[in-house]
Every structure is written in C-alpha cells, then in structure tokens.
Amino acid sequence: MPIRTRVTEMLGIDHPIIMGGMTGVGTPELAAAVSNAGGLGIIAIHNAGSPEEGRKWIRRLRTLTSKPFGVNLTILPSMGKPPPYDEYAKVIIEEGVKIVETAGSSPKKFIRRFKEAGLITIHKCVAIRHALSAERYGVDIISLDGMECAGHPGEEDIGNFVLQAKGAVALSKPFVCSGGVGNGSQIAAALALGADGVNCGTRFCATKECNWPESFKSRMVEASETDTVLMLRRLRNTCRVFRNDVAEEVEQIESEKGEDFDFADVAHLVNGKRGREAERRGDADGGIWSAGQVVGLIDAIPSVQELMDTLVKETEEAVCSRLASMVTPRSRL
Image (cartoon, rainbow, N blue to C red; front, top):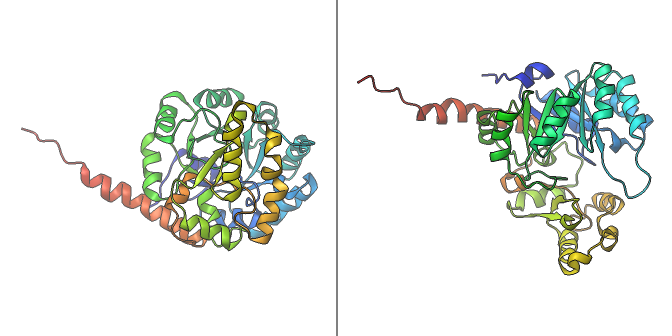
C-alpha cells in the first residue's frame, strides 16, 4: 500500500525516499533512475563543472525522466577559487527547476532567490538550531542529517535516534531523516520518530546505475559499519569517508600531529583531483571517497528499481506486520 506523507504530497512522488545531492555520483542518470522508481532524484549541479554545463545536465535529466526531480546547490569552503554559486543558482531558476536542495553554508541569500522564483526548497541541517534558522529563511523541507551520514556530518555528533525525535518536537516544517538509512525498517523508524521521509546517499551509490567503479561498490558490500573514518576533526571540518589506505594515512597524520595538525599536511591526500583520478582507475585505495555508516547494511548491488521496491516492501512489512502485531487490544475488565 502507498505510504503518503507531507513530503510525498509536496514533491509529487510515490515514495517518501529522496536521493540527496552527492559530489561525483550525483549524475542525471542516477537521479533519473531514482525518480523513475518513485522517489526524488537529485543532481548535484557543481558536478557538471560549470553553470552552462549544469544547464545541459538539467536538460539531459528531463530527457531521462518525466517524474519530479531536484537540483542540489552545495556551498562549501574551497581550496582555491570558489565555484560560481550565483551563476549556478541563476541557471537553476532559468531552467524552470521546481525543487532545489541546498547544503553547506547558510543558504539565506539563495533561499530568498529560489522562493521568489517559486521553487520548493530543501536544506540539509546537522543540528536543530540550524534547522530552526532554515525555517525562518523560508525553507519548505528540512533534511536532518545525523552523524551517521557520509560527507560532512558537522561537529555536533548527534545521531539520528535523538536528532529525529527532537525534530518532531522543535520543527514546524516537514523534515526527512538523512544519514545511515539503508533498509525499510529504518524508514519505518524514521516515520515513527516524526520524519516525513528519508534522504539516502551512500545506499544509492551501491546500485547498478551509479557511476562508481565496481571496485568501489564491492568494497561497500564487503564493509562493516565500522569501515568509515571521520577525518579533519581537529580543523572542525569533519568529513566521513570510506576507510581505505588513504583515509587511514590521513587519520594517522592527524593523530600524530595533534594540535599542530594543519590542512596542508594532508592536502595532497584529500584533494578532489586525486579522488576523481582514483575513480577513473577503479582504485578504491587511491583517494578518499565519501561513505556513511550504512555501508554495514549493504549486502548487494541491485538496480535502483530493485532497491526501491525492496525498501518500500520492507517499510510496509515493518509497519503493517511487525509493529501492528505488537499492539494488542486493551482489556475492558
């Protein structure tokens, strides 16, 4: 039976499952597969390389799906010249995109522009205070990211069991649970905690449509929930990445340097160019790549449609069978 929430109604999707914007893998092909399977696929526009290439990506995505989709604009510190965020935002608006996801630094300026253009806005937050600020800016849907997530989990170290429950009490706008979600039982739990859906990243990377090499996907299948590393913590720029040779080298340098640790000590190891080259070669130990703790739940590499069908079935079974069987009528004596 269909699962209807405020998020499915707002976004016009069949299932309360969003593919969050992701560097590298957030391509039109993967996003289209998620949208066609009934979720919300999102491309990360900066992956295109330039605003005009981003325009081409949006147009290509429209040829791959007639279903709702979104575009991600991630605003982060840069090792060099920052990306042209204003130009990316302009392209998103000019191309008539209906749903936009923002992440990283304060989205206030961009949310105003997107709302004036009539877009539905989603913003990723790792703390309730950030989510409350996003609500004040006019964001429509909050993505509450627990520390289990891949990429940048922030510095709060709040897991989803507390973060989602707090969101239900503190927030007035719909929110989705992001970080560590890999099966239907977790989706049911997120809904029970007050979320109106989930945001999955790493789990969609272990699908046939993802552009990562098979060596990366195989490592995820083999991994346990302890096979990620939180690096750059001393710089308060924490990143969760897959535990491989490079990540462990960064971890060791950071530990040995202690208070003297500086980004320059590991810049040659963590730069994006090295990571993209490792992807091109299929070398899972050649550079860093983001992955959440959900790798411990990944045991197969299905198609996106197969994964979506499984997630929905498991969610329904958790709600309608397992949980329902635990509720017994009260005695009238």
